[in-house]
Image (cartoon, rainbow, N blue to C red; front, side, top):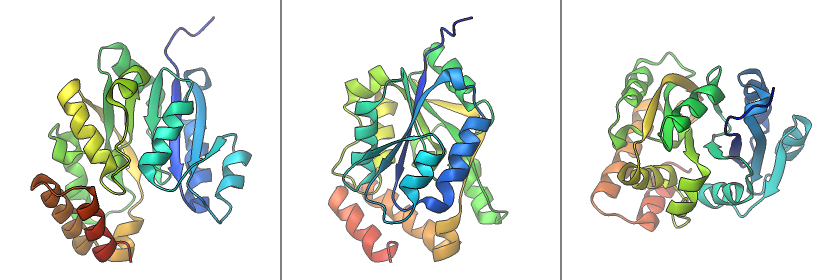
Length: 234
């Protein structure tokens, strides 16, 4: 029997993600129904490891892009064939039947949304902050929760603002909150705490908080990226 559900294009921006990408794509296949997935698009920003080989060997389609997640995700959306776009970070694993949950939300008039989030860590501070992802306030949003959106709405909103090198997910979701009933699905993605392990939980959470505050106070994409470069990307 033909599946009349809308189909999902999964878009994964990557840069040197050979250690995580294979596990992610394997979990995508395991946790979804193939009829619901139009394609898996891996958008590479110039990897110099085995990321592209891993992607191709696991059945994904690879597109080459300028470096920058906003640019990579916009390119993926432009090339996507599905009725729904689902943006995933390479180190974030979606829940079982995520495709069915997304299709249910879209067909019930929620044009965009995300999942709640857990870290792959038992750290109490990370568990505390991850718990806020169940709340609807836009300050609780972020790219690690993944993002689904109807292709039609993505085109209307013109997608991610490519001026943002960091904070691109938050900026886009902030615009979506003004246009649609953004839905928080009651299931959890599992995302890597690797940046926290590298930089320290308290230190990194503080810097992320400062970036949110700077954005709230009117700092533009250049100032946010300058702070990120000086305090985090080292």
